[in-house]
Picture 1: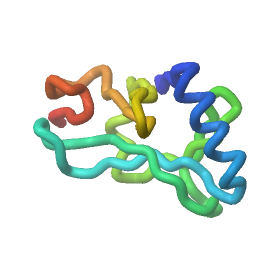
Picture 2: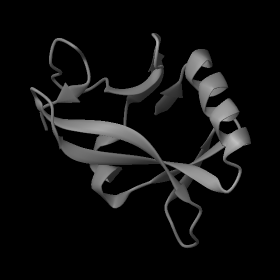
Picture 3: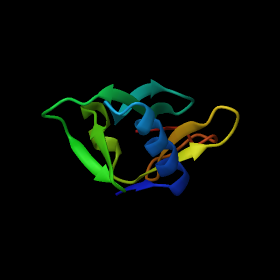
Picture 4: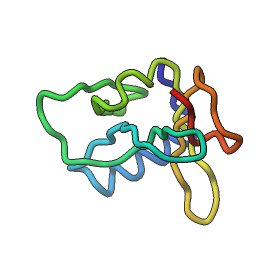
Length: 102
């Protein structure tokens, strides 16, 4: 199950208003102190992709992230530059919570 916090929902919706031709995509990359990081990017919407809808927002799931999205929380890290953070709730994470071991 993918959970989207209220703050993240508001932030993503406001970002998409300014970039109406873009769609958020959840991807996996190697990095961080634990080895893997799920992250959110924006791409131009493409057909024939793995899409899901969460709280009225369409997300694309990149094939690299398919095996790691079973139980994640998408949140926002507040600060001078707000940042989307995706936490894998089923994995061993590092202390900052950004990266996890697979």
